[in-house]
Image 1 (cartoon, rainbow, N blue to C red):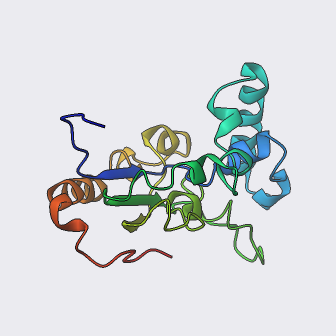
Image 2: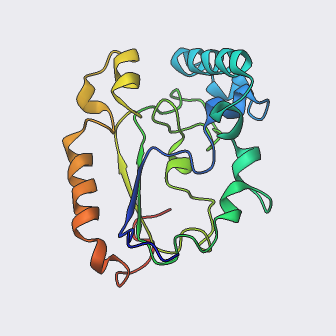
Image 3: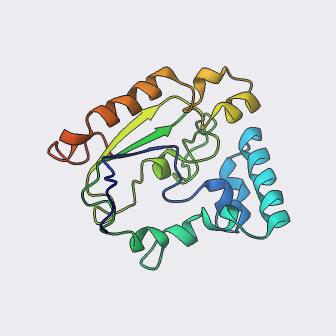
Length: 188
């Protein structure tokens, strides 16, 4: 209040609005079996759990469904904060469930290697929290770090893909007119 700084827009890249499936596993919310035998997913879950247990505090304990979601979750406490700020949510869906896996857990698949697409696009976050949102999906990983781990070119990372950077630039350039645009275009 009273600050001379005005936030014109917010753009998030692979942000775990609803939690990260890796943190969900590390905190006993999502079973490892939801990886459906995918080695990359299982290794990521195991590594996250080891890190969370080593640290015993920090974001690994908070970036999960239990902390963020529900009537007492962090997200609900933010209702009203973004009322006059257009939000662009960008998610990656580079990793899909193994073929023929049958029904999948949408909090795991598809994902960017760290965050499920449903979480990055805040599909379960109410309009009370995100009243002016725009959603974009790219066939990318979470970052160049994840791309490197998966043996993929860096350009497949949300943080390196020129198309994503163009989308961020467009969100910044269009911030002043974004509140008058239709709400939730392309959002699930």
